Length: 588
Image (cartoon, one colour):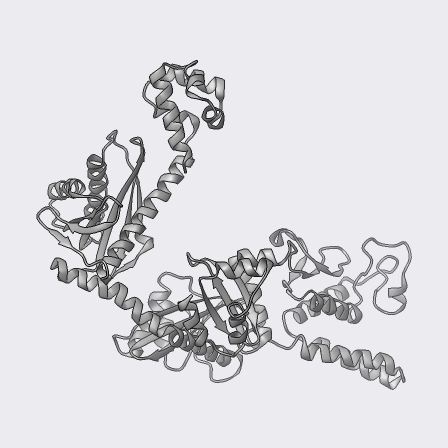
């Protein structure tokens, strides 16, 4: 909560979207705000009830994206909700989906409000979604007044009132020119994508015609339509009204740190962003070029990249083989300014947190290097094993680079040998890992940590020696409460101050490798069939297994039996072993 309080103090009063996160960093709610500081603070400075109370109780962190207008934040909110499907956005909708505006896929189409269950399977042309259902309905009413689409759900035998007032072409009786229908569809499509000029002209003409014919009441209605377009459907700065894939990149520098912001535009609208903050070591110009080229080494290259005038656009265009432009004015310049503003906010907001995190990670890594006398400690690989009664044996490996987890480097191992002890399990996983490192010429770690004592250390060192690899191996020595008390090697023990950053780094590594391995172990077990379970119980061969499968069929039925009931089918010792195995299997 202290972290949230500090971040609240740094919030801007500008409009934007905020993303609430739970304790594991998962986005659980996305909202929009006219004033980010006032709105986000309101979650934490007052009492709540019902679903809002449940949401607030689960918020452990948040981030936000600043926009130029409240309407922009509305559009961005929609895109973020579609991307992340946050838990509490779904709950707070009361099981109602956001409405879309649809041009139906019919011979004579209708313009309607739609709530499709599966958007990608809808045959009509969809626009939206609209979180404001009133705005969606009002827009459809406006367009149906201006364009004579078919209004009836099923075709009548004769023309209706809409035909007589000029809001329908009389599709049920008249021969309709398909080109006229296509023109309507194109104009409405253009309008719903943000190009309001053509519709404005039509309404203005109708307004002046009504006024000239002394139909002032109708003229006022058309005037209100124009006001609605200007106020509610204002042209969006972040909408470029085309299908060009674009990224907008800008940066901000402060106190030898650089913050990058990458806004991704798809279908003319921002639908996600990436942000990076790291120490500024090189010259700014070189850092800009390096960031962009390395970013697109791992990400899709869009058709167009928009940057500020500090970037070398010609160099970047040649390096990543796409169009890179530096806008001087207009919508694209405003997008570049928006990226700068968000980069600035991220760095200003997180500066103290970044400094503290660097001390906790990179600083702790450096101190561990000093303690172990490893001159360049960059990559640590840590291992843990898990099994159940010597079955379903697995190992997990996690990687920490400069004190931070590098999850794309994590690896899982299903142990193949019939060994039941940690010594041989450790030998197998170490051999498989580092044979592969040698064979594929992968990056070698500077330190190996095994979650265990001297037995596991000896097992790992024996294999490494046979592979002619000289990599330090340390074990995590624990007390009877399973708390790490020291690091041990084959010839030395290192006492660690429990209040130090080094101790906390080792604890994070231990917790991470244990979590990763246990989760893999659970997934392996959950996939096990009754047949594979019976294979792991001593005394149950093929014949007994077939009889049990035929009689009980499912794990659930077998679990419900007592030892006495199992003894009807099995010898006493085998029945007890199976009962205990199933009891243990049930725990997770």
